[in-house]
Length: 76
Image (cartoon, rainbow, N blue to C red; front, side, top):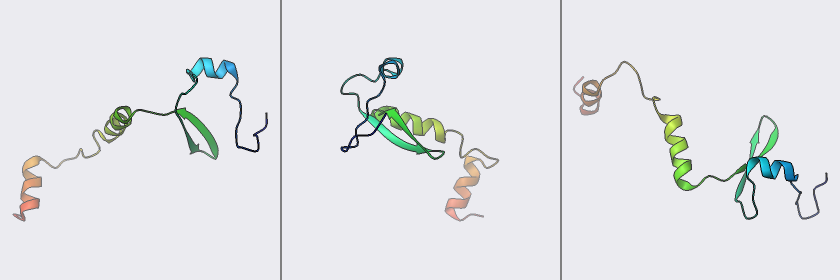
């Protein structure tokens, strides 16, 4: 398979069907481990939900709300 002079390539039908890549599907291209990855584009809502899931628990630790309040107020 070759890329055309316009940078176009045909995605094989079996892959389009398997991954639901219908006509007019918005896609994104990403780099991962030295490869180019084509993915269906996420809606803004889905993108926000993905980022929130990834961030969930990131601030977990031994510090509590009262400790944070003391630190921010300078009451240490």
